[in-house]
Amino acid sequence: VQLQASGGGLVQPGGSLRLSCATSGFTSDYYAIRWFRQAPGKEREGVSCISSSDGSTYYADSVKGRFTISRDKAKNTVYLQMINLKPEDTAVYYCAATVMATMCPPFYYDVDYWGEGTLVTVSS
Image (cartoon, rainbow, N blue to C red; front, side):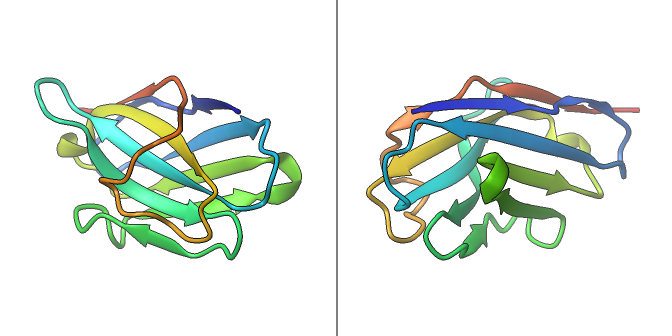
């Protein structure tokens, strides 16, 4: 399994970005993709999750109403649309996969595969 995150960049507060996570190598339809982020000097935190089997999603409280996770099955890509970005959203964002998952696992649940991160900087 391979994951490649992209789409990060510099954006002003209140702005928007869309991150992409291109995936490949899954051998079944039962997996979950989670987005995590890690800000400088802080612990990694979970952001959002989408289940491949039924498309169910969940979000961290800090991003609810501002971030939307979605998938394009034909392109094997998961997206994280981020609006109304705040300076505290600044972090390296990672997509991660958990296989043999019929639903999204909790953020603390083990990750099977990590992608390389993409840096999001929210600053004026």
